[in-house]
Length: 199
Image (cartoon, rainbow, N blue to C red):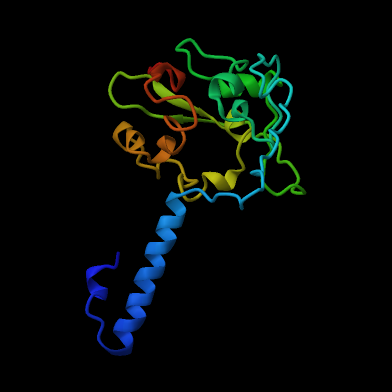
């Protein structure tokens, strides 16, 4: 069976096009049909790989799986990987508590030889609109995770009053919304940030 373009070949171009079409058709037919062993030869069957204890046998793991090969299903299953991490009152993962309790040990940088920077203890008060309590931004838990360059100066300018923060912008992924609601606790948990009553 040859495509319509190859029915009336014209010169050398048509001839070459006909060869390409026939070759493609033959390759497609070979892919659909499994190769059969030569007469008198048994098909080659590879033995199954042995199961990895605790990973492929369906056992419940009592500790977090080790990262890396064989990249077991458990290493990608949040129900397994995150099951021992603390939760806040709303049921969200409390990453800072997990860090403070020594359950997790994040690295400050992807560069293995870069020295760790100690956490920076500075609280910044951010006024809130209306009767809503003001926000206290604690640098200490944030700098337990991140170096200053992650946020300054691209996300937050380091000058009081120069960041026009609003909940609309945060919801749209600006300022605090770069992490909160994505990889940090959701912004619907108002009491985590709005902690200082006015007056």
